[in-house]
Image (tube, rainbow, N blue to C red; front, top):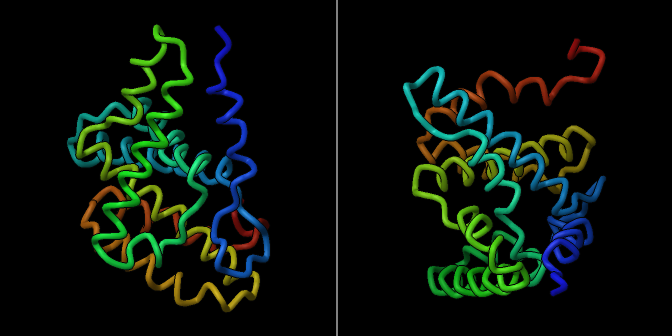
Length: 190
């Protein structure tokens, strides 16, 4: 049996984010997913080392790599539209679930359970991935505004507030300790 799953995942590089915004540098879904995975892994480590957590950082990091794979089928829905009202949000969540299921059906039966687990994380893991997703968006906003793109100023403020509103201590620590470096030029990061 031929499986199309990984060929479909390779198309993540063709899905561009921030479609309603003028970008100084486009960001594709592959880049974003890797960054979210790196941040989610770090949030788990922070939680475990500093806050007494017991989260499988490797599992969450890998799950974060897959968190937006449904967008291969659906495309990237801009946040202002996706969260415009509860009805649209719920319909879009259902569409994402159908897309994830369609992707999973492309896998051989013996591999499906391993990948299904990546889409079915618990609430704590989901909160970490969501925070990492927001932090990644915030980093994109920093990069754009620091490049002189004023179009991202409102998104910068809104995304920072969204991270803070999550009330996730590990995310607050990450924001305090690691985000300031994103405002520095390379020469000042050594």
